[in-house]
Image (cartoon, rainbow over all chains, first blue to last red):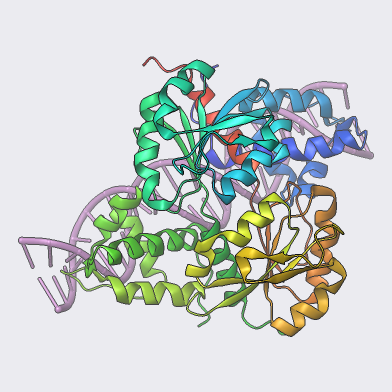
Length: 216
Length: 216
DNA sequence: TAGTGTGAATGGATTCACAGCC
DNA sequence: GGCTGTGAATCCATTCACACTA
């Protein structure tokens, strides 16, 4: 399954398609057309067709896409047709919120270990995750190995982010979801997605001010 | 200040530039070149120069950009050279984490009102926000008006997202940061940024599986 | 010399338009 | 008739290369 380089934006939209398909399935839709899928997401029908066609021929001319079938295909492409064990580094407010976030489970992601260096938190059981205990950061490496962890969410304060990221990479983590507001330097074989919550608000502020005081 | 349409990716990077400039300033850097700024963020020097040049001529040939000066310019462009009052709808785990998130304050965003429909939460003071009380969703409209709120963060469960978004828009909110995993339909004059935490993990899963079991 | 600002060239992604299929 | 898959055309973003400047 060695396809040529696939457009990054198309891969991102794959997640949206999957989410929308789940909604359609919950409403007992058996089949959906590219224009319906696009309309629900604010995309053109051509965009939807081209995106899906990058990965294979999933539709039936004259009919559309079979919802359940397409969901399986997309899950397989994304690699979420199996369960991923996820590590959490940094059990502050955001980290706790992520541990309690139920959508991760539904999508196949399980937080199976949590780390922090605050002595007050160490050893504390996490209610949301049936009694998982918070461990010191020094124990990252053996845990990654033992639980076959490949993904980690990084929720530590900014100054700790790079060193903790280095430790995660050294322990063998293959993908990092970074919530700390710093840009990390990682070896090229480690995948990185950065989520900067404050910068998202900045983008909103820009859009709202650029639009100017609306003429109502 | 009516500039032609500016590249969306460039505006997104503006937030990164600003964040990096803050780091440089904290390290007492007076001046920075496009290549230094780019290197710190994994971007080319040409990219940095072109992005900044979209918005004006901020640099000095032979010298670079004056850090403090450029920060002011970028903040002004983003509209964050003033304070924004932000409303929070949905005080679950994620909502609580956002209320406690200190970086919002630093960037000029203040959560000044919090809403939820859980009777157990109503009237409860929020420790992180000096005693702010959680109000019922029905009171959104008068509060938006009274506190001149233009931005809102949406942290309610998926099924509630669209109706609550409608209420926010009706109340006069101009920009929405949506954390619920559904795609919202909003009037075109309302800005929208969607953050789907689960889909970010999916993107990581894709990158890690696409890379294949690493040959180590 | 070191480094910006910018037209020109390149490279990607989106849209168009239509042949082919159910 | 309705809808997919896909080359061709268009549009947009990034990179290149260099004139110009402190």
